[in-house]
Length: 557
Image 1 (cartoon, one colour):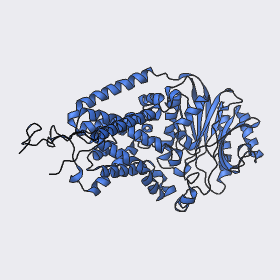
Image 2: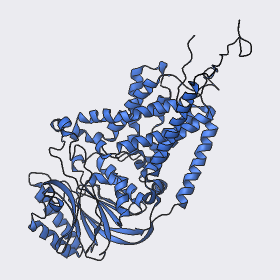
Image 3: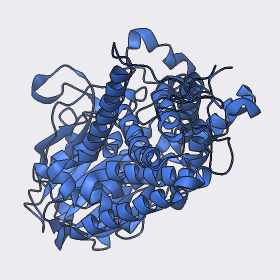
Image 4: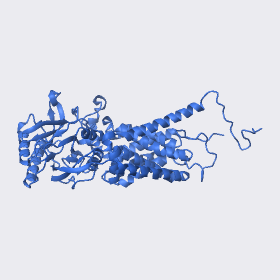
């Protein structure tokens, strides 16, 4: 007679339950009742569900239950190998769904990338089965509430590396419109929000699948909610005061062979039109790639921008996307640079984009993956990177002396970059972006929503200025300021951006939830390894098995 299968993991029981499956027994259905192909398709579909929580659907509440089908599937995997496979397949579904708008640029290569990055979820699938799929005890349920979210957070940390695509689609970012979640972000960044969202999903899955552990799970959920509420209420927030009047210029989609020159001309006309309406801004912001030539090589363009600055009585922050020698005589190549222009021309403050979009602005390992340029719109030439962040001081206008921290496009997805700028003294964060290649998709809305998280984390207002929408401004608590400029808008908007002082806990302590998650997983792994060593220690007496007609004290004949 074969022994029943018992999942082994950090908190696995030493002996299988002798009770039959049913009421009071292990509430686990094994995968034999479904074909492997049906489960595989279910894993892909379940992994894709969380995408609905992000813009444009923006079903933020759905994020708290979106992982439940995937979790229920993983905990019933018939073997560790199947759990690994279904974790990987769910990861593929998640990556394709969250990045589906890249299909026009990457075509089939998006599936290749999703298949590779989906491997990050394979160990998570094994972890879910190990801690949530065994005998239904209170200890295992509480372990699942800690370890399952911790495992997810480690995946988000790894794929947030710029070379793997960056932190796009972090689950916590789906809560960008929710005031309490933004407050939590000021404590532990988007990382803490992700951790709590996955914890809620795990609790719901356990409540649905394992009735016997409902009391400890509910008790843990209530205690966790009370702790989060207390910390959020106690945590210091930004002190709002003063402000800056910002004019955002959005020229819209400009195509054709002379689009670079026509875009500059349109941005100039729109700026003059706004100034004629007595905008009187403290700063004028143009979007990414708004200037198509190095201003050091085109003094005529520099003079036109300086004339606008004189007319506005305030500096302009433009973005140059052009071939140049780079700062301090660096190697020639294409840079994307935020450049501050005052009444006398460029002030000398220039920031070269540091984190480039994989395949969009460079091809990783081009010698190996350069074929991606033949199947999509991958970069034909690698852009050059900047080497350090820059905080710029406004030289003129009503807000002279204010300090701004520029980010370029993709960089607004990185919590550590905005945190560094605030620590360096930035009063205002400005993200210049261009998503014209993805008009009509979910990308513009998702990109703009990231500014709300960066504002809440840093306690500083964020201006997200784009060429083609969505342009938006968020105050120091992450709440919107004024109405956004949508993708169907060609025009300008003036925003009364509130100022702020003070430091959030995230700015002080950084990604502490990530380190807490790593510590929890390390402790669980060490405890599991210690149990394995104890069981395999030489000289340990083996327990005699009990049977229906025998016991340890009365062996069967």
